[in-house]
Image (cartoon, helix red, strand yellow):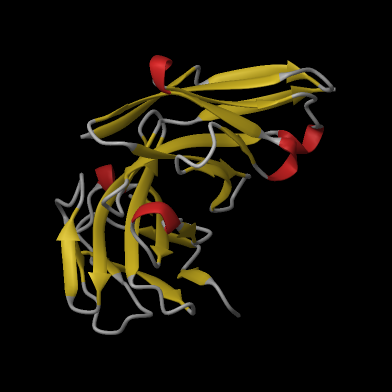
Length: 113
Length: 114
């Protein structure tokens, strides 16, 4: 079975500050991990995904995430927050043999000018 | 337009009425999914389909019906809407399992059941 836990339903950062959004996963098989972003009144867009090729994954808009098997974590970071980063972020996991995704409950990111 | 489209974007209905939410994708993806998004629950899978005429239940299927007579369409029907089905509904599609699996989402349908 697969599941994800996102710590912190709301995160606020100042413009230019580090963004850190936390995600821990549980999986009985080697997982594939994803971060999606949702802007207001829009669907989800893929930010990045981990498929075991490299533990540090770079995505769009300057985001990256590091897969840490020992900590079962896949935290999302960005060195310098921009106002346009304000959105809802979802972590998701899927099994390497299946097509179903299991989503976390989401983290709402606010960027303070 | 290419991509995945959902209609309507907004819908208000009354308890007990039948409602159908439409989803259409132009990529010919094999897999299609319906999720509902609720505060505190994230996205929960309602139904999914691996191909035309093949559907299966997800985490929260009760009260919903799906069909997939054509690869590109995956309508979701609420046979007798209840207030607890007030939610934002997202359709998604993908064409692979395993390492190439990425799900692409529609813009969503916001449904209010009064």
